[in-house]
Length: 124
View 1: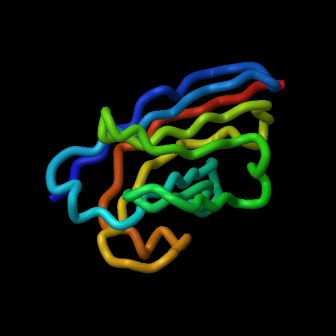
View 2 (view 1 turned 90 degrees about the vertical axis):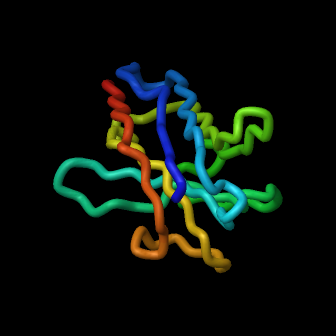
């Protein structure tokens, strides 16, 4: 079992920054990849950013490239998402997810464990 707990959401103005954190516990040695997803009201859950648990290459959805940065905090066994230049269209519940099998996947169905989500609201 892997447990994921997100933190760091909130309400900000357009142009502001937020830093989300996903703390992992349990059988973290079994994690292959961690990703951030988001879901806005009335929309499907979409991939935002991902990286290998061991570190290395990262990938992002086109709409956040250059504004968001995903990184691994080895000391805290966590994965962070630094979000800069936030836009109202970034408003959503943000989820952290872990995938145990290998493979560079961006579909929510391919992930095995999920956090409870954290709300990010960006006003114009």
